[in-house]
Length: 160
Image 1 (tube, rainbow, N blue to C red):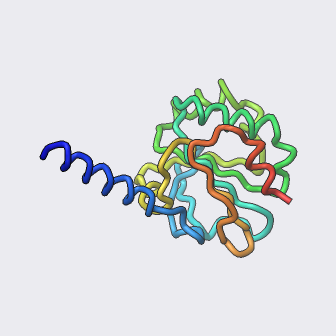
Image 2 (image 1 turned 90 degrees about the vertical axis):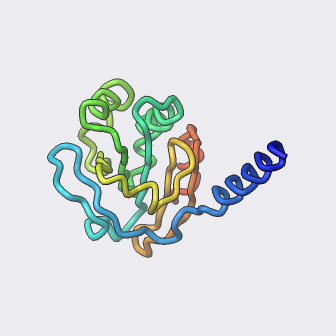
């Protein structure tokens, strides 16, 4: 009987997780700029090119590889505004930047955001780190979502 209950619960939670999808349009949010803790809301997003949200954890190996891949291919992201979003505090993020992506530190199209109110998870429904969302900036519509992907070249293929 216990095995049956465990199996049924596993099926339920697996199907529930599978039902959670990336939002088709960018949801309202309030994150905070890492450098000065000022609020950053959806109305500050660009209206042309691409919007990329990279939800990551500084200690995650896949996240480190994805970020390093973005840095290595940054010229291919010239029409993109990239938002690195994390729940981690500034000292952890600063260490991540210095160690893995120092070339992105002062790029105008790269912004580091702190999700101190933990809004990202319920609004964007990530299931793994990193969770990368590519949106059309004009329509704010989802183009592609990647969960757990570490190869930035796969993301680049969707940029025109």
